[in-house]
Image 1: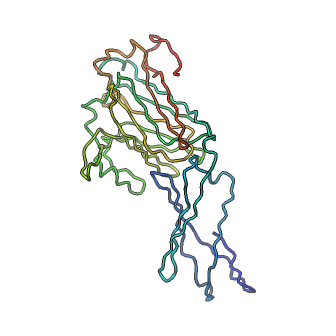
Image 2: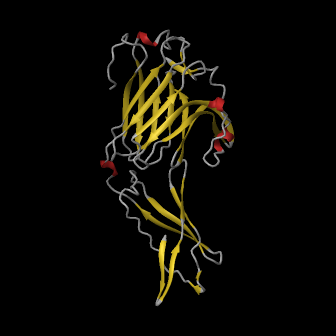
Image 3: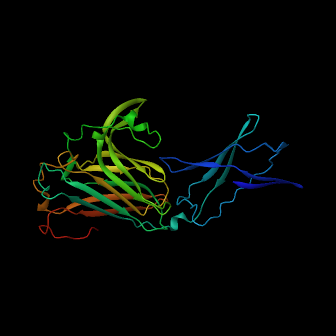
Length: 315
């Protein structure tokens, strides 16, 4: 804030007060922390009775796409140390009119990695036009032909280590890196990038931790730091399921997730499927939006099989 300090006939120059913007790495919520406001300027005591901040730059802020009741909250502190909490509630309308038409593609790559025991690279790309409802959650069920390799998925980052993200850095060992990810959003001028880590899954029962299947930690870095977590489970059919249960209410025009293949790849073609080129492979997705809308897709998985399988677009 750059303010002219004018008190009656006295012009005391200009006062500059900085506010730091902190982005929550899990929710993308913005916290604004101000430097102390001056209470004495050139020997003259100041009595601040009102502070009014107007943000009017086009596209600097966007409304959420959820119509759940929200509020802007704050905490004020005086020069004597007393504190007060303040809040201003708001609720949007018309969220249900926002459409949900994202597109998800999934492909396997790696020349010759099509037989049982091979480790192909998996790449999924989610795209979404602007001015739609933002995603809240995403679930993808892979084909039965793909499973976690029990030998290559033993290296996991300890749960407590993964939770200690300091100064934007992840302290998981390099041996737990299983891929990479990137995200493009109209809110930032450059994409966010990061490695994908295999992390020990934990669920708490009556306060006691119980180990579950490993999860994916996707720490995206760039102009801001954002940490996405994906849960791993197995459906009743035996298919491997990946779920992002909590996605920030922010527009993302393109999200790319790659799970590396090769000798140390965590995804393996199972023994019950001798060659994925023998038939088409399908994945299923369930996407939920912030406004409550849902979209289900049956996606044909692209494979490095050449022309041995007729290529058809997913439904």
